[in-house]
Amino acid sequence: MPSIKLRDASVAFPIYNSRSRSLRSSLLARVGGTVQADDDGAVTVRALQNITLDLAPGDRLALVGHNGAGKSTLLRVFSGAYEPSTGAAEIKGRVSSLLDMTMGMDMELTGADNVVLRGVFLGMSIAEARSRIPEVEEFSELGGFMHLPMRTYSSGMRLRLAFAISTARVPDILLMDEFISVGDQTFARKARERLEHMIDNARIMVLASHSAQMIRQYCNRAILLQGGCVAREGAVDEILAAYQQGQQP
Ligand SMILES: Nc1ncnc2c1ncn2[C@@H]1O[C@H](COP(=O)(O)OP(=O)(O)OP(=O)(O)O)[C@@H](O)[C@H]1O
Image 1 (cartoon, rainbow, N blue to C red):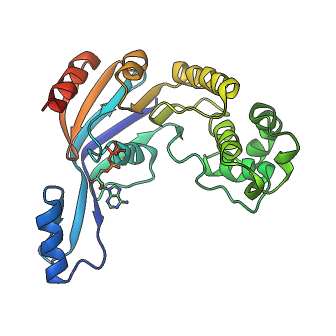
Image 2: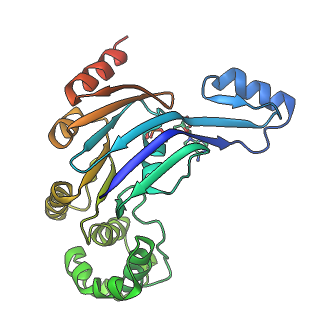
């Protein structure tokens, strides 16, 4: 059964070249809070602190919080891209992350080759990824460009290809940073339908968003992140109200 379990998980990013005393003290004084120095003097940004969380099938979780609160970092822990620096994360099930959709793609390779490359990156076998090429070609509407190097694509074409591959199969766990919109009006409508199908059929879904409307539409529980910590968790309306209160001057 798909699940996500975090126990006291923290993520800290080291800041290199910050060992000089003057740089260190100026960093600590100016940024404060989440920037900390350990006993050896190494400076880190603490992106997440002591997160304990359980997600099970049926959960549609919204991550709410200001810029820099830790939403994307938490999504990356869920996707397995980041290991907690301390604590534990146990992710069970096939994950599709729509965070870095072009990650793993190579500009020198053709669209078709990139379907295989990105498919394998997403956990498919080479044979399965190859078998997806016709369907991705049809969905992305790239025509003959599918067999040209990706560097010849416009940015919209790249995204259409990346979206078509990343959404080629319904995952157990779907991760999204904002509700993505891809391509021109007609393509965007088609992409939205596919995304909604994935949301309906994924067992667990996590959406980081600043849009109360999207969160109300797609989520059934929420957490409010502040400075990398879970400030509050609960029902969507309660968390959105707490977030909006925090935004008022
Ligand atoms: N690669 C990195 N190296 C150093 N610090 C980082 C890195 N990624 C994120 N951070 C820091 O971690 C903290 C959390 O960042 P994160 O991107 O998770 O926030 P967020 O809530 O997704 O913000 P936004 O709403 O702006 O996307 C911030 O203080 C940020 O500066």
